[in-house]
Length: 177
Image 1 (cartoon, rainbow, N blue to C red):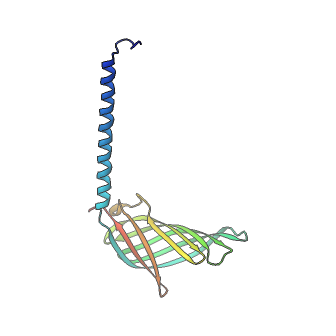
Image 2 (image 1 turned 90 degrees about the vertical axis):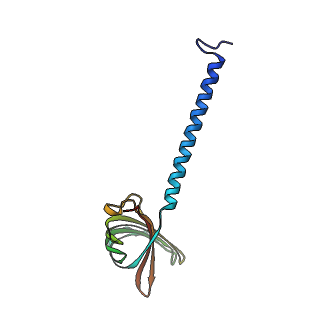
Image 3 (image 1 turned 135 degrees about the vertical axis):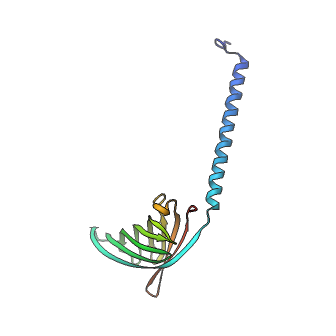
């Protein structure tokens, strides 16, 4: 069996060992970096902001009004009060079905103002589903959308409607000042 010029069984063994050592070292470094990133995300303290908001919605031309489901649009203007102080502008897309209390909406809004005294803006993404009256709503901060003193913001916002009033609970995390 020919080993080719300049190659011996010993050099192949050394190369194989070297590749194994480099691969293992790379995996260890990657695992340490992943663990460090995961630990820093876990250690980021969550804070709760609360308050109220006023909302004005205005219909925009519908995309489609086919019988059985209507695809609609609305402009959204909000004024936030409390730990969030500022305004938000956005747009909502919705689909209504022929089944009572079954629908869906998505919305995007850009908040501009202060969060617990920190100035900036960020974007919220809404997904709401109503399945024959059973509601599920998720509102999250769009990753990397925070600006100025809100750079690095992450979180979820819970909307509560009580006695006709709009309330929010915003669980969020921000890097240290």
